[in-house]
Length: 93
Image (cartoon, rainbow, N blue to C red; front, side):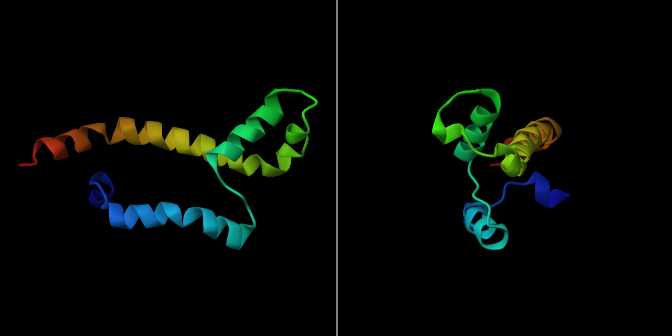
């Protein structure tokens, strides 16, 4: 648990985040990005005759669930780990 409460170095987390998109394309043939989540939400919520939003957004609903999970995970991490992170930085020289 202690590895989760301490900041990870940029040279580890940066490539991990950067490899997410190519891995999704290679293994699942899934395009990922927050902008595509916005496109799915617009296609879902705004009934319009714009051809850009006329597609089967339900087939890509996994992307909306993933984006919602990022928001919920960020809220949980901010609430649960808030005290540990503040204490970690206060103890720095």
